[in-house]
Image (cartoon, rainbow, N blue to C red; front, side, top):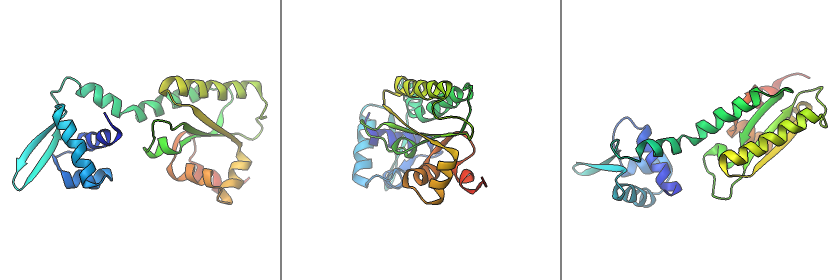
Length: 196
């Protein structure tokens, strides 16, 4: 299933009513022709049904398709990734101030070659060379790659550097604060506002 087909099917599964091609285009952000091509292929393989409501055609997922439970699970991989990562971080002996997934994966726009960007904010008092801390970071990167098949790009900063970077509008920190998934700790925006 292509990325565009996944977006269309995800929109249909989330909708409470059947959707027109125009509505699918609007919801998914795809052009009407791209949405129509995606829905045509999904109809061809039986995952989507068509309802004729003249003058429009409406689309809905086919809940009876044998593959539908598997497809739904595939479409929920973001949720599963968040849950697994949060569970892993909860086991850390040396706690982080914040762990946030950001970049294309967090925005729902990954490509086949996208890595997983993770910002880890180290609490004050934790040395950058603490062996337990370093093992936790390395283990998280390895687990992310095993879980997703994507390379993990882990950026580790101290809480004071993160605070300064947010206040000076450092691009990657602002992106993480705006679009990221907070996996652990308070949201980055709160870190920016906190006094030293």
